Length: 380
Image (tube, rainbow, N blue to C red):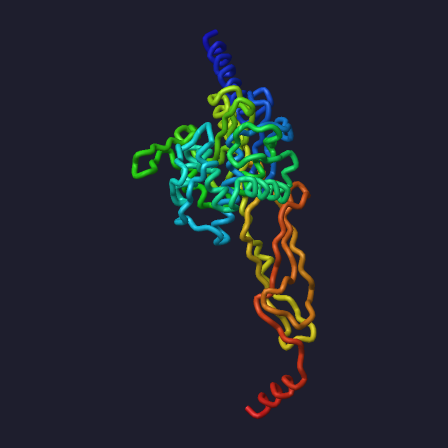
């Protein structure tokens, strides 16, 4: 009787363990308390989870993702420099909400203003940067909307550069993920988005990051929080583990705690179920191809796979590849010319393609060169 009871107990325990492992790797709309959310792979832009992703909503200081994206572009282009002096205008200094209390005429470097914008979500610093780049906030906002259209952000209209509530200033969870993905292409942003605490004004002004996940979530890299009465509690959270980079967007949470909990649940789901797969170059890509009408009879080929693609964990067994190469090529051929291709497929569906190229150049046959070649051999 004891043996049967022990066996039954073991069966129940195993059942519970199995049930937990299945549910911990799944996520549903009931698990996410926020009204709108998106989980996106940062490398490919593939959406891994969505809940009302195109619902138009206010987004508070998540707006600063686009502001910072344009700042990074201005830095990359050389239009501005990290060491540039930024002077706070009357307009910038008049911003309410979260700020660093800039006084009209006060100066800081671009580096300090970016730090204040992303770490402390400073509205005044964001406006000061906008004015430094474009001369006025209105002109900068026009540039923000132009960039949004370029990125295909169909639900987004910006009215300001800091996210303070304003009629018609809206976006969607999907659009936030898209602009977050564009921002983190600029890897230097992580230097700031990972800061937990720092200071300005020679230590007189303390900055504390509004993203509490920096202290609690493994692999977190950023990115931006936002809270207003219209938007509720919002976050665009970025994290990376084992080469997989994810963006979790949560809009309209009732509390900051729920926003962080939802973002963590989305990221957990992504890391539990997906991985980046880097294929090995097949040996068949390195071969000899006959050359017609060439100074050489054949040439060698090679392939360089310099990318990775998203797969479900354990899904590498579903990855296959096809090699496409001709029996011969026509001269002339330049070094690096595409000769064929490797196509990777998942369950028969194409997911990636890489070129097979020539390792050497082969000139078209030239009878003058042939004559001198033959003559040279004859006199040896």
